Image (cartoon, rainbow over all chains, first blue to last red; front, side, top):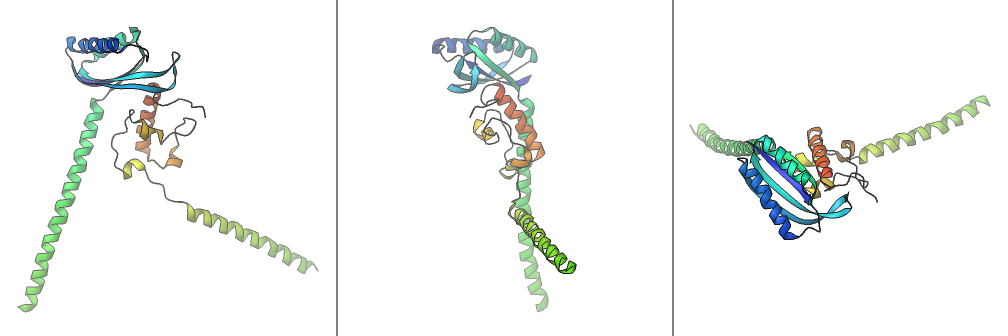
Length: 138
Length: 99
């Protein structure tokens, strides 16, 4: 199982119902193949940075799902065949997520260690001061 | 006569050399040390969907700003490159922008 992110651009003049229907269809593609859809996010209409198939804007849809690699092939084939979709991009993100998690953990650990170290050094200094004060008295 | 002629000539050359030295020193003085924005702000994830962040690293024409100008460190520039190229692919950023 791998986690993928699929961002695709739908024609701006496609009706809303048709788009929803298409999204449901794509969801079923993943689930029937044994994967699971984690997130579907419609960004809405956005201006494209350059013209694609004579369109200057498009509706962006973000899919996040975990599945086997073969499912992605089928998913992409469907996108390619579909008349609605003008552009798509698949990114495998499980490794990136893992790396980010690790970095965050390392960072937290370092901060924690720093905090405890500061705490630890602060206390002995007080103790040493007390010892220092006590020593001359003796 | 030859001596007196030679002296002003050499004296005339010296100040210009001095001016140049001053100019280069000034230049060096004003050059600020560049730091990697991703390291300083502790941005771990350079995501291709974050158009606002990425667009601050592309020039007017849509070109990727080189490291020597932006000051980004090598590992982060590599990730930035990947992200910008992905964003271009899905039409979030331009390949070549018209001014």
